[in-house]
Length: 392
Image (cartoon, one colour):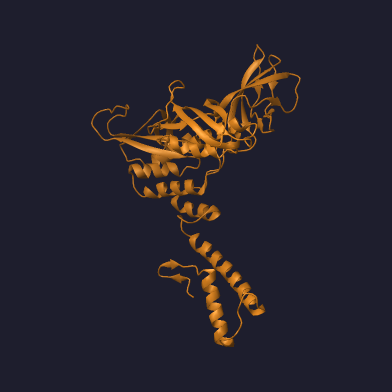
């Protein structure tokens, strides 16, 4: 039974393998040989077929691991290197702003720990000097990378290791959301975008070069090929890259743009980075960071007795995490938020769900985003109303 044909790998099913083995047994031992599953010989045949079926499944996985559209895990990571990508974007840590209170002038050492009620710990990465009023704002980084660190304001409530010179803390809110490790579908999308622009100085080629920088989530290239400055302020004969990435990657992003941009064409944007060519001549490369479009949400849910004590916070976190997965320019589709809310244990129905761009006017409608915007909803911007679900 040939598995690899001109149409690709065709894995034989268990039933097909069993039928072939029974047919072979009868050809060797006679048509009246007992091959029923209750007979010893029939059991032996089925054990052999089970092992063979598993072997074919492994062969199928190996076969599909050589194609980017079907490879998964480490196999996919190895394949994307061919397009110039460095592999999967790793998980990043959430960063929170916390107001520390204590002895005026005291330098709170780096590594100072704070935690949530559930024991999720955060730490500082540099010394924090308390001011004359005994307070100072510090950045606390999640000990564990990923979206688990995206807790709402007020969640950091206790000091892990007591210090008599630090008397208290107040959690102000999130500074930078943590991201989970890039998933296979996200990596495939970035791979296809990177492949689409190889070997030329087109907009696709520039975008592909930027996407090859590890840590870049998305990039949009906007051109002004007219003879006058456009409405966005881009001068004639220029282009602007809207990049969704942390600022520490600015130098790598500028270098990627410089390698692909056409000669004589200006790279425009709000961020300027000096890049030197092979002769040492400096060039100013500009691009823009995608701006966070901070949104608000109101959700009213009906729950049963299985709804946990901290269920409202889980609902907030699910809505926030759903938007964190969007790239720049992606509109916020209201209906896509229902699934994450309903995934929280005990939520039986989403009675109402509304969004707002200003925190005042709410409506049950989608919110559009431009290429320069990436929608986000901090957990503290989500209002949750809970009522008891009544079975009809």
